[in-house]
Amino acid sequence: QLQLAESGGGLVQPGGSLNLSCAASAITLNLNYYTLAWFRQAPGKEREGVSCISRSGSTVYADSVKDRFTISRDNANERLYLQLNKLKPDDTAIYSCAAVYTTDYFTRCALNGGYRYWGQGTQVTVSS
Image (cartoon, rainbow, N blue to C red; front, side, top):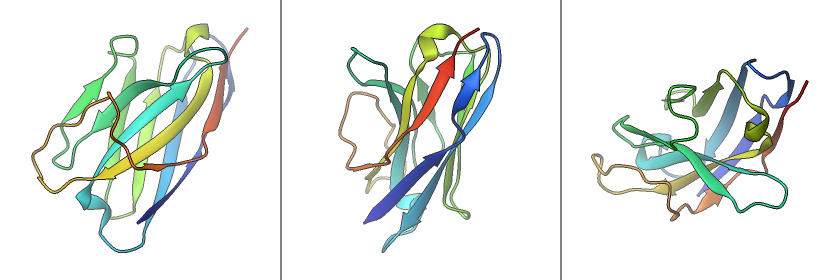
């Protein structure tokens, strides 16, 4: 069991940066046993995967955010982060963190679904 809570969203101008964090409260297993990810959903659009990070630390990014966003995790402090740089208006969305228990330490993460636990989301608005 896992509880997730995002924070760090806000209003930023195009080209600006934000740091999103996700506090994970593991009820039984250590956070190290979970694959973690960030998703986002803009008004009128389907939810899309932004980035994910495996138990071993390998990462995957959506093409739309490559070279601009950076995902990281801190298992000891039960935190997941997303650094958003060079923000664009199209990045405006509610960003949610997600997690799924993963038995294999080396399983690579994916952005095509399968996440069991979700946070409520934090709003990121990029506008001038």
